[in-house]
Image 1 (cartoon, rainbow, N blue to C red):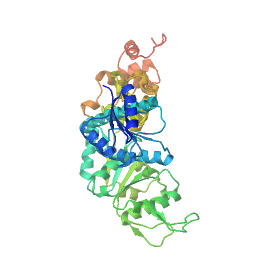
Image 2 (cartoon, rainbow, N blue to C red; image 1 turned 180 degrees about the horizontal axis):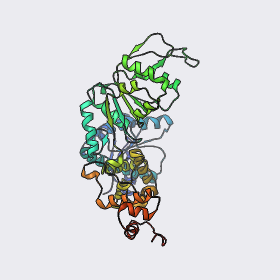
Image 3 (cartoon, rainbow, N blue to C red; image 1 turned 90 degrees about the horizontal axis):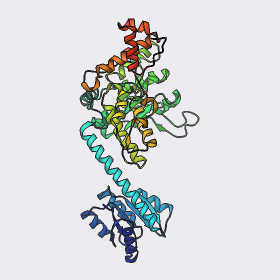
Image 4 (cartoon, helix red, strand yellow; image 1 turned 180 degrees about the vertical axis):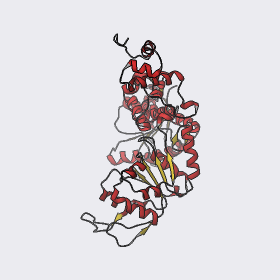
Length: 458
């Protein structure tokens, strides 16, 4: 079907000229000479795009664009004016316009802009449909996944959301610790307050101290004015102490006292300031080992570790990787103005086989790369990064007891045999003895796995 365009212009001759030109360019073009009539048509008929003049007597094109964005947000709007300026363009974009054109214009160029707007609309509708499917079947608020490991996390979040007790979120880098913290915040009593996050590993001790506790004017050389610390900024909400395992040791006693007493003393101040915020800490470090090594205070550990949530790595989440991959593909496609691609079965198999050492963060980056470089309509094996495409694990992993998280027996056997050969440093005779099979049997298995065996091995 031809895309349906609505032209809005208070000049009848101009309106008719553009309508006829767009009809000749393949659009089903309709016109309205007042913004009120345009809104009436949009409320009763489906349109794919609106082209409106900016300067009209009863309502400006910018105001009309704002009304359209509020009432039919899926319909893109292109604004046209004879008096183009940077301010007008900025106002148009703020009102939600897809594009901004100046007169005189070439009709073919206008038709091209409208076609792009229609394609953008189709992409948004496709992603919204995908998101609705994912939302209803696999989402828990801002989190995505239905593996047993994630359902266990959701269950804990439900139980602790309205509790004020400190939470310690642990897990490998890239597993989504901040997203879990945000979900706890959004479901708890603190949801009406602010969510404030600070990376304890991203700044030196002195700067982190002023960031957390604030400072008064004149506290140090560049302290020209008073600054509120993040502990007070998060008052009534939630403060995430990310990468707390990397917090400088000298700052830990001051944080401990603040958490115990619920007051902070800004740098250079003589009076303390009360605060009331939920504290969530996150780390990919083993804090108990850090305590033994003298890098983390034991009393601070017990203060933040009232409730612990250990996030599973992506490799232990089974089919969640595919749902996340499709979600990231959709997001990246929309940002790049491309159709949302699907995954071929072969590509999906490789994504499930890869162990994702960088977890969800690595998967997101991988899908963004795929969208940027792919040429077809579906993601095939050839579109995946080489390390994912060619990956063959030598490790045996039994991640859990849910069917989606378990591997076929043939795959477990393959990984175990390769792991034994690796542990034996390639000595096939020793590996065969460990496995309890003959050397020729081992060679045949290795060949079936795609591992080359030299004549000397045989």
